[in-house]
Length: 158
Image (spheres, rainbow, N blue to C red):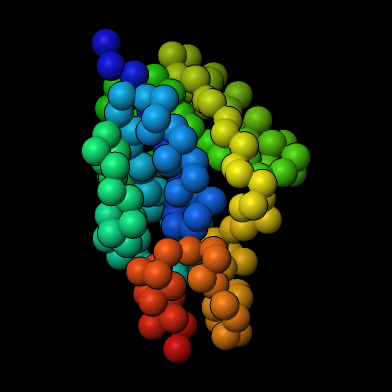
């Protein structure tokens, strides 16, 4: 049986921190799916299809696929036979929220485990929100996101 993992997120936009988690988890699992969530409670800068296109441009790994979903994560995971959810952690503050979500997901989908990856320390401060804010005010984001993402952000925020 192949080991399948799911890496969900809004990825608005994808950052080097996300890419670090994708690279490392794709080396552990036979199949990794990046699942872009369509969250009605958020107001994303990029549409779900735009985010999917950006991720396809910057993720060139054979065992990684990209999908979109809305609704409950555990339902999507169960419907697609995922055994594992990947979550990235930057700091202790992330852990509190992610721990609660992991326990909730475990309760709702009792065959689904969550594995936490600590991001590389050079990305521990990085979030999509910070990247958008720095870009919005004309700051250099080249060390935060790939060139394709930087161009898309600059085009959108002008």
